Length: 585
Image (tube, rainbow, N blue to C red; front, side, top):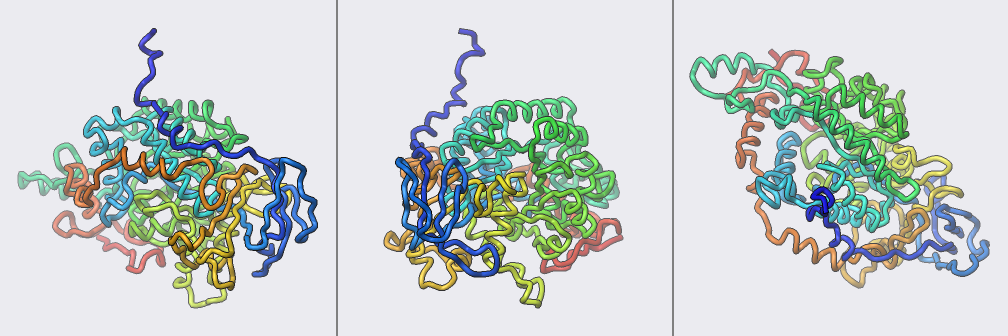
């Protein structure tokens, strides 16, 4: 046997099959006398809903539809509520291995803790060799956990912005999502930074780096910065053309091997950010999207520091215009996560190109990034969807938790209470309808709405569960209430279907054995870890990054002048509780 034909033990995904169950075959299902939200206003109606052929085949007045022939079945919906499935439009499944671990830090420092402590990182499962030695199974198991948690909170679709090393990692994630049964939009998260300048494009450059370096050199000392000589960076990091070509090939390999929309697996082209991908890579990403008709996804202006980097390093000074100039922004199905710090002109450009922003309030607050101005973007006509973000920044994939926060958060943005969000708007418009639309999976043949001909991506909720009692407004209770975990309380989620195949029955996923999944998680990562491991001072790289971050953001007067260039000082109001203006020279 040729050595290249031998199976690599790192690609062994057999443990995934041990926790997977064969899901039931799709059969026509009539939900009789089920409660559904009315298409207009706040009312509800009793309806018969027939699921058949992967779609919502019929909707009629209660007790009027004829039961399907065998092997079809009829379910009594008199104590049930039917909703369109939610779309978790931005997450990073690999973060499950690190959730709850990283200390309170801003994104630019938090991300270094994530990179170092996930299984493939330098502090991962195999120490310094983790990147090469950690099996793809780590990617598959975390994707399975991500899919299960999203599914059990009402999501029928997930967009996973997933860092992959190779196609083996992608194969593991695909296998996991197939087992769970959610509609998976997997976006390989790639960049082409020169690896000799690790993390240079994650953190803004200190405005006074040059003069600070001169003073430090004259004094015979180091600033403690990220350069190999211990000085502060004065220019952005470069890109590696060979890596650009390799990453573009990896994207295309993933598309050719795994893009199977009819089977519920969609490959989405996902640059990390406009800062960590060269213009050549962004143009290459655009070309691949055009070739295969794919959606695209990226992070966009998540933090004030990223807004600063856009002004420092991009020719136009705008990350939105930069994506537009590369041809990436205006292609159908472009989604941009976070987008807290867009200017009004940038928001208008997003609306004009049809690009969507993904609101991730849980992680934006957890990392101190800011609050996306929901009402402003909606007024400009931007399509806004919702994401949980990864489980190390939101620390979970409970979409109901995120929807609750989304609903109440923006009430503090205006005293005009008549414009405050309602639970129904947040759940049905932003999360369900807008989510599916954002990736070209909405409309007459897509998901996200209860209408004849739409995808049968739907969820059925138990109105007798303790969390949905007493009887007030069931949808508001679901979003704004809580879920009691006692065995006798009842599972709020009774059932779910994706493409007409039942993925949840009696409150449990049909495709995954939860007991075995718990056992596998315990076996793969058996020891607890201390958050002290994620202190920036814990490694030389993160310690140097903290020095540069504090200098760039004027948090430490001991380094630099404690001021920035005037063009870098002014930022949008209303994103934070503090004044975002930086002191200028």
